Length: 95
Length: 476
Image (cartoon, rainbow over all chains, first blue to last red; front, side, top):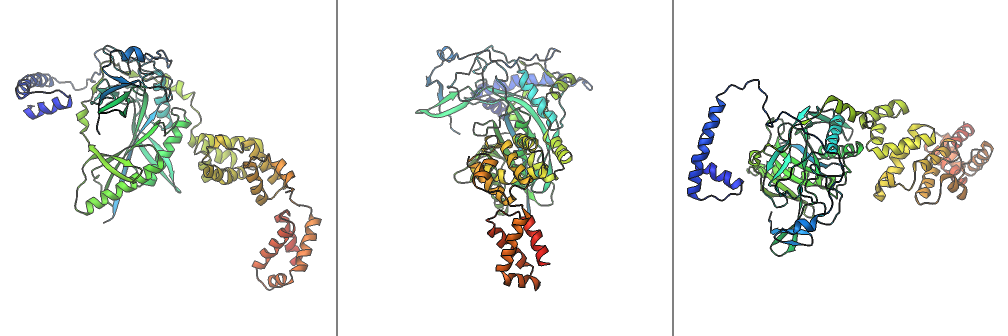
């Protein structure tokens, strides 16, 4: 599978990363290299092997449904760039 | 051309837990902004999610309630997108291996039964809320809701009309409350539906392009939105246009749906397994433990009511439409001790009508189950007629006391003394010679007129069955 420069730009857009034309070209070369490695791995016969979802073969431990944290708003909002009436302020979002 | 609408639903039910799905912050509704947003909710670097056991129990309960497969092993995935109310830049959800697999829910649509297949139900976290107009050019973000546990319930595209979709949504709404996993509060957003609508020429198999109506939080709006959207798609196609896959919003003021943004491809979310969360394992023992705490389900209760109380299927379905209604009925029957059909008639009839009219839930009924049973006893022992009972019920609803008080106060006791009734009948026959003659000439209707006259003469107090009987005897 080979990528095009448009694929790179689309992925960058989805990740909200700004890439210049030169950066996109360089990224294309790197990503193509990674895909090459993946192609090599895909040549291995994995039939009958269940895919792993985690690198460790253990399962999730659950937490009891008990409130353990209280109001820490003041503490957290000390490092926020802008707050008002308890809300975090961000540049206006338009739908 | 004849068109057919095809509808599937995705419902977000907020689970009835104390804390968030991945952290110990409270999820109580209505708190001051960001006072329930802990380090996990606001996504400080380095924090890790820990799954809430109660959210898992809720998912298992739901799976059991819709006869679904419960995955012995399910995994959490990251759904990546950018929005300020999603501070991590991804939502933790389930993608490939959801906790609840295929199941089904049977709903009553008019007098038809319809089975809707459930594709899956998965656990996920809710996002925060954006508050607009806080400051010029800015949006305010409240992350109290971020991390609230949701179970997203997805159906197959099995519904063929707005009525079917609404019937399914209502049934699901009752079910999640019945099994106590969701408070069902639609105003507070605890139960939100996204509806996928497409149309195709009737008789064809291939699905049309769908548009998704987002965030419907009332059944009335759902009905209106689906009807509008269906007609819009048909009109567009008949005018030679094509449907673009899109997300649309319903505007309750205009009754119209409007495209919000072109629907991004599913793989734009770049789903991948969340390395912060290990697979969730659910054993048969876990399932059995939850099963032991499950209430009797509506379907089972319906069959039991048919057998135990001899109720017709229609009555049993109506009574078990909601848990509070079923509880009310059982309390009535227990206090009444008489014929169950009589109780179901009153619960489904006068009581439901009054509740609807007043916009009240049955738990807030001014006439308690015990009070209604008191009224039923007086009907059963012939103290009052069914017609008088309606008046007594009205008075009970208005808070004038219990049935016996009202009957005594209004002097409503039915006259069942056959001597007294005979006297009335004689009097009426003597005064209405014309009607008597008409009846004897074969005019059946005249008989009803005579019954009416007797009831009137007794001020409505004569036992109508006895009046009928005595009149017939005297006219024979």
